[in-house]
Image (cartoon, rainbow, N blue to C red; front, side, top):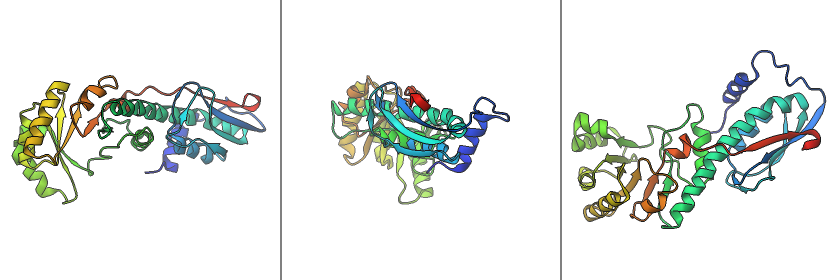
Length: 275
């Protein structure tokens, strides 16, 4: 879903307040958004939307997914100095945050590829309220998978559902309620429960908070029951431990930290002679 004018208005209202004197600068200017560290670009569509909302012209820009080095220009602009300065902080914030997500995702994907060409790195719903679209697109820019964008995209049978209804009963209940096109992902916490979830009718079995050794055991048990059921590892997995999980044979590694803990990529906006 693209960034809307309503979102941009909310971002700008939050930053500009009611009486912005700081940016009361006359004349025309040019500017550029510059990388101060190595990373992967994302959030360019959102940053451009902010600039163009205030009438600032974006002359050229990097594409989401591009790798950048310190000193590289991410985008260049021209327009009224006041409008450029008013847009600058919001544009930098959204592009820096999204680029941080993309950069961390690319690091996780590269770590997975060191052990497996087939495993997918996926995000979760642990996103910043109001920024899910920006963050999910940043994951894709980094080479990852969005996982489900919202609750309507897939049924996840979690521990609370199992506690309330039982595993088999919960899967049967949601299978009856969901569309034929909707997959059911069942969360389990022990290797022994993985084949039980497959027998209950899971399309995907989420191996939650297991060690790499336990994950490998669960994958083996799952393959014996149904080799077509996907195995997903999740829960506290870091970029550093991705290779260990990739070696287990799982199909998907989902990581909440891609969105909730990615550091912002350091970007700087320079105008006028400094641009």
